[in-house]
Image (cartoon, rainbow, N blue to C red):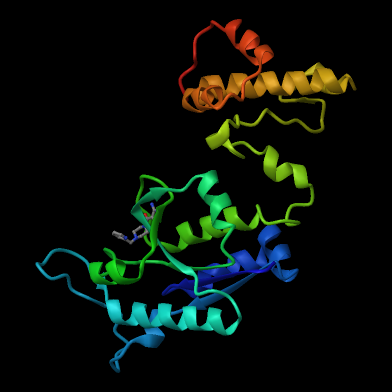
Length: 262
Ligand code: 4GX
């Protein structure tokens, strides 16, 4: 299967990062995913290529016009159908959306095509959102200067979960947050050479060659890290039945204080 993503953006150059760097670049070169950008400016209907205007009711800033965005989205979906794919669902990146999490990343991988709409300025005319947007997704409770970086973050999270993208099939599933929604824990700490750095030795168990001991230590470190940094995630893991009796016995011994996240 190959995925196709069409992005509506005033800054198509920003998306070059995904096709020129790292894991996302290699997956793109191997044809696992494709990207098409659409600049709403090319669909502006006046000779000044206007894509925004002042807000009705007054106030600061500008609002993106509905018409150039609607035409850009139409063109993208038309192209997706010509390519033999379904017209993708339209996702608008905005702080008003539902927070992105790993479960949503996984479920979006069921869709071979998507259209991502990136807003700039104060936002997009509400009537465009009402008529064409299927879903609003937020990266988090903070404000970016446009939807592009949020769309790129979403794409990066999607691509690294696609089959055959990561060298080690286990590493996608093992990550911190790999599935915190269904009981995953934060990652355990990692060490590489040298054996002593800044006066800190590598935990001896990792040099022991005893794989059962190493696995137990890593599990316990993950439990401790989750307990102290994200007790909400530990509670979710417990509710999802993901903690073993050994896990619970270990946690019961850690009556010591939960350190606040610095
Ligand atoms: N997670 N932004 C959208 C335009 C905008 C302005 C006002 C709606 C209302 C963001 C985020 C994000 C900045 C993208 C504002 N949209 N996107 N943009 N947080 O901050 O996704």
